[in-house]
Each structure stands twice: as C-alpha cells, then as structure tokens.
Length: 294
Image 1 (tube, rainbow, N blue to C red):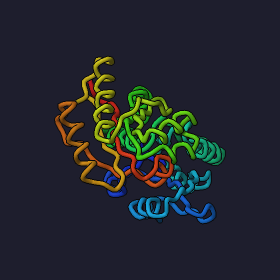
Image 2 (image 1 turned 45 degrees about the horizontal axis):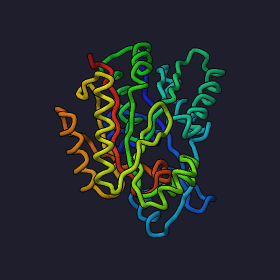
Image 3 (image 1 turned 120 degrees about the vertical axis):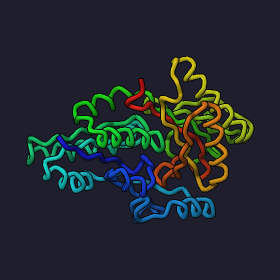
Image 4 (image 1 turned 90 degrees about the vertical axis):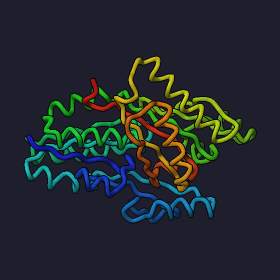
C-alpha cells in the first residue's frame, strides 16, 4: 500500500526539505496580540518573529493545528486510497496529536477502510524532524506501511534533544519549568542545561555561560551513548539554532567531532512555535536512531 507522511510544523524541518522529501506539513499558529493567529513558517517569517521577540521583549502565544486543519490535510490522500502516517509533537507539550486523532476518527466514519496512523512522537523541534525524515526515508525505500509503523515504534525512545536557553523566562511563562529553577536561574544568571526525552523536559544541570553549557550538553549526550552501548554513527544528528548561524555552525562542528560522525551535521532554525516557549536564544542539538541501523 502506498502511503504519505504528515507532520505538524513543530518538527521544524525547513520548508525546502519538506518539499524535497514530499512531507505534508500541518501548521501551528502564533500570535503577538493573542487575537490574530497566523500559521508559522507559512505566514510568519521565523527570523522576523525572533527579531520582534527580542526588540519588543515580547511573549507571544501559540495555538495548535485544529481538527479541521488535519481533516483538510488528510482528505485528499485518503480519497486517493493511500495510507497516512502522521507524526506529531510530544503530547506533554501540545495537543496536536489529539487534533490529528480526532480528524482520523472523523474520516474513518466516511472512509472506514482508510489507514491513518497518528504517532505522538514524544519529541519536538529538530529531533521530531529527524524522526519524520526517517519515516520519509522508509517510504521512499519501499518499506511497507506496516513495517514502517513498526520501525517508528521501535526507534521512538531513541530521540533526545539537548539545549540551553538565554534565560528561563519563556519556559516559566509556558509552564515548562518549575518555579524554584526559575528563581535560581534568574538570581544567578546561569545557563540551564535542558534535556528532552520521552516527551518531557528534564534539567541537565547549570553552567556559567553558553560555551560551558554546550560543552556539558555534549558530555551528557556522550554519556548516553556510552551507557547505552550505542554507536553515534547509527544516529542522525541536527543542530537547532535561533538567529545566530555562526554560533550554530560552531556547535555543528563540535557535535561532528565529539561523536566522530562520518557526515556533516545539518542546521535547522527552531520555529516560532517552539521559540515561543524556549525564548529567542535557544541553541542545541537533537538525535534519533536510523531505522536501518544494525
């Protein structure tokens, strides 16, 4: 059975890469005034969004894709008789997957033989994006629908993202971090180390500046591979950047060197939805195991 790959825009795959891999995006919405919401990336330039956050010290809002957004996206593919694999941001961070599941249920009433698999990725931004690309790689390699779903389930827990932020203000406002950590971070001016795994955000410690924070995050990731007995070259990596590409290039080189990777590490810009909660100075890297790694 032929099938198509869908993903919410929280995966932060660049639009040109989405087109290259024939991945169907379903967009989150963002707003500065809490009244007018526009689709991130499609209707809102991400760099302009960052600039406004910085210049206005703004705390914008986000809204998840609606059920109708998913119905509208799925329907043409279902009518063609193709299967759908839809990958959504962690349910601990967003209800996007619930919108997708409701849309699936609605379509199954009209098309009871449709195959629509909604996967709550337990990830966000670049590691979700890497996970989505694994799905697209499988489709293009001729992996069956059933086997692709099984592979995605198997590698689901391998996703990690390690990052730091400028400060904890946006995470606190979004309810993504505890009050005590916020107070300590604000008082000391520290850089928090944040690790996302299994759909949740965990503290990885603190550092006195961004360079030391990134060094420690690389150590945390290296420790993961050593304890798991995993070869980093069996994983795909990606750096998530804000608006400082030179800073991101430096980190990409450090990731490649730290893990002796045989290929360059791509750099994607963290989208407006995720940036709303991390703030405009987030920087980090994510990784996910390749579906065909031995």
